[in-house]
Amino acid sequence: MECACAAMGAYARVLSPQHEERWRVAGLLHDFDYERHPTAQEHPFIGVAHLRTLDVDEEIIAAILGHASERTGVHRFTPMAKALFAVDELCGFIVACAKVRPQGLADLTAANVIKKLQNRSFAAAVSREDVEQGSGELCQLSDFDHAKHIDFCIQALREMPPA
Image 1 (cartoon, helix red, strand yellow):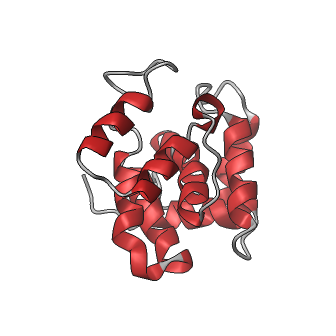
Image 2 (cartoon, helix red, strand yellow):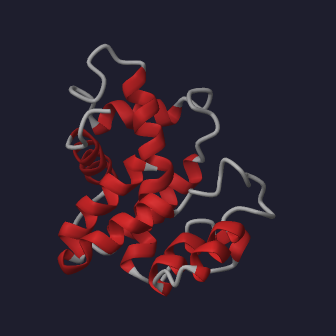
């Protein structure tokens, strides 16, 4: 979740600088219920219901619902929602790529990630289709292409404070 938060903050600085904190919150909260409620019937519905009791901003809630639109039926219309969907699976995949490299994120490139994406047995749980679709949706908002989007997310993760 922290990885999505970092990538969302980086994208907010490009696409919506005045709302960086809100974008980071969306990245941080989008999967907070997943460990306890991982099924398609529960996630993200249970988390969103709780967030509504806390009066969390509806744009953030829509982005959270949009990151699972195939289950929720909520379309991604806002830049925040498109960015969250685009970074969610990709950031997890980038972390997996970094974990199998001696230098971790330090020398990881988009080309390395793209090569690993082609190996369907590597981090098999990551939806390659979601990575591609998210990248396509987000790249319509900027001058980024798929490789630049991946590099941008790698850089955002490099800037995270050490764990």
